[in-house]
Amino acid sequence: MSSALIPIEKALDFLLRAAEENPHVIDVALPEALGCVLADSQRATFDVPDFDNSAMDGYAINTADLDKAGVTIPVSQTIAAGHVGESLAPGTAARIFTGGKIPQGADAVVIQENTRAENGQVSIMEMPGKGDNIRLRGHDIEKGSEVLTRGHQLRAQDLGMLASLGISSVSVKRPLRVAIINTGDEVIAPGQPLGPGQIYDSNSFTLEGLLKGMGMEVIKKGIVEDSLSSTEAALTSAAGDADCIISTGGVSVGDEDHVRQAVENLGELGLWKLAIKPGKPFSYGKVTGVPFFGLPGNPVAVFVTFAMLVRPYLLKIQGCRTLTAPSLQIKSGFTLASANSRLEFIRVRLQTNANGEQVLEAFGNQGSSIMTSLSWADGLAEIPLGETVTAGQFLKFIPFTGLL
Ligand code: AMP
Ligand code: MG
Image (cartoon, rainbow, N blue to C red):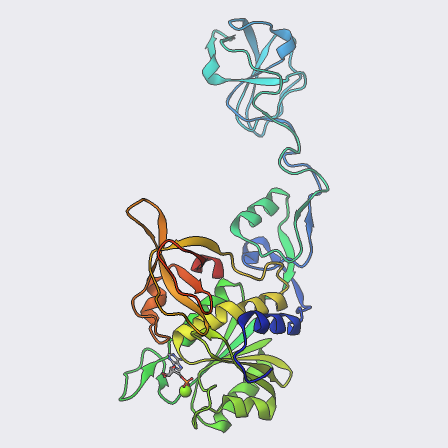
């Protein structure tokens, strides 16, 4: 790519074209499949439910037997959920509970509230219509229908639905193994005392959380000092263990930025200046054939470049159908007087204004090192390149919840 600022759409397009779906497939038990990506579409092998059953507690009757409300008939049997009754004797009612199998010959259930029971008889105060309060066989899922498509990332409710089909394990894409490397002589791990000029590593924790939220495995390669040999050693080790490598820091053009040289020595690297803020320096390449992302060092830039570019790339390798995070159009509650020369991602929170409308409020300090802006915010608002913002103007809002 050229040395001009690269629009994010172009960068994303390039990355998604380069992303090759990982072929590895594993079978996992249902509880472990949360967050995994289906390797095959799932079809129902039977109807759910596979028998007509009562939606309510009440009395199963045959509407043709009874022509008016207020009629009193004998209760011939009781059918609880999980039990099978006999055919309904003509002119009688079957006491039935929610989930109970509708007996042969019944075509409606009178809800308990519309009856009066006494001495083995029941009076029907309000006549139901034919089919009322009966959940028909297959009304949730029809035998043979596709319930989930290959590439779907399994959520809690999907596991429940698969379980309703009697499925106890599924074939999924093996979760990607992503190695994280954090460069910087100034960076140390939390838990140790902070020396002069040092800072704690925050990037690896943010990335680890994001990756795990995406159902991926994380291999932390730790903090790497700013030297060519250490950077090369960490990258080589990462390439041996992982499907993809992400580094933070050391990717600019300063004397202590060795990532570029190290990756070039071990493979290939494209250093891009993205037309986004934060996150201008960004690199993508291969380390001995393994995809590599060199993210900036500043924590907010790490978050934004990961969310906008690395995430969709990884999801594509993982075999996901949906690559982009959902977004909403929400009115801005703030103004921005000066236009940007890059697409800007502002940390915002949802607020209710005096008119009861939901609007976006921006964090005060939008610097790329301000970690509190990310913790404070509910998501990112996109400020199009070259535009100012007036209060009430609709902005694209990307909730953080959609990034996990
Ligand atoms: P660099 O790109 O290496 O020049 O880093 C840019 C900025 O990000 C510097 O202020 C670094 O101290 C900071 N930084 C680098 N790595 C980390 C990290 N793992 N956690 C928090 N801040 C970092
Ligand atoms: Mg550095």
